[in-house]
Length: 161
Image 1: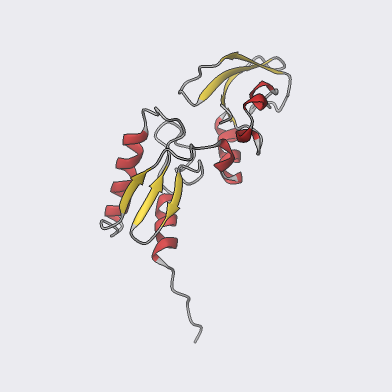
Image 2 (image 1 turned 120 degrees about the vertical axis):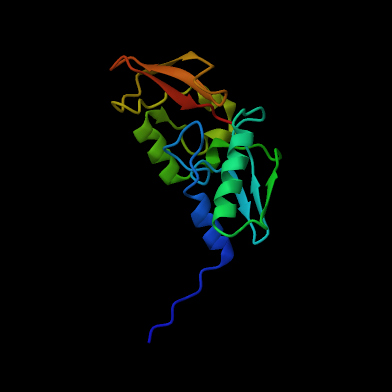
C-alpha cells in the first residue's frame, strides 16, 4: 500500500486562496497577484496592490468566505501595508494570466525602480514594444493606460511599485 502524504493546513489554505479571484481582475487570483503575503495555520496576511485600493475590503470578504466555507473559520485575516506591495510579487503564472486577459504586467524586477515605468510596455494583444503611456490613470489606481502604436489597441499596464 502506498502512503499518501498528508497535506498541511497551510498548503490547503494556499490552494483555497489560489481560487479566490481578484475582484477587479477575475482572471487572476489573490495568490497570483502576490496580495497574499503570508499563510500560517492561524492567519493569512494580505497586502493590497495600492495603499488606497478600493477593493481591499472586497478582497478580505472574499477570502473570509472562502476560508469559512472550507472549514478554516478560525484563521484570521490580517492586512499590512508595510512593506508596500510590489509588482515583483506577481507570480509568473499571474503575469501570463494578466497578459492573456489584456493587461501588460511590468517586467520582473521593475518594482524596485519607478524609472522602469518609462520603459515601453509589451502590447498584450500583438506583442509589439512600440507602445506609449497615454495616461497615468487606468481602469484602477494601480494601473496606467497605454496604447500600442502597431495595432492601435489601448491596454492597461500595472504601475511599477
